[in-house]
Amino acid sequence: MPYKSIDELPDGVHHVLPKHAQEIYKEAFNSAYDQYDKPEERRGDADREETAHRVAWSAVKKAGYHKGDDDHWHKS
Image (cartoon, rainbow, N blue to C red; front, top):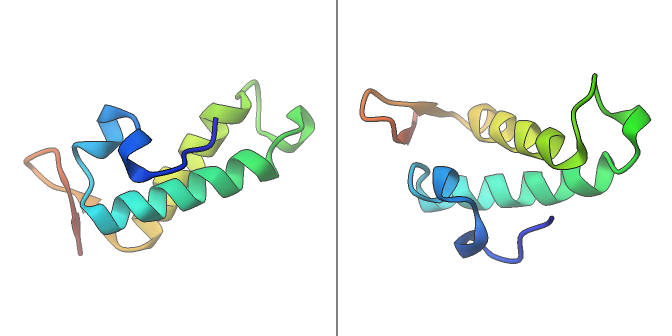
């Protein structure tokens, strides 16, 4: 389900990403959730929400963030 604010993001996202990356994640998730509403538009057996989370993580990585040794994400 789409997120209205970054405060609604799952703990596994909210506690490891900096604020700007959370905003990227939320926008990418919401966009992908709308875009991949039909099963034939998704890969394999992934459901709509799983696909949206994958797209959101990809967007964070594409924006230059990486996971550090401290398990938090940092801008490259």
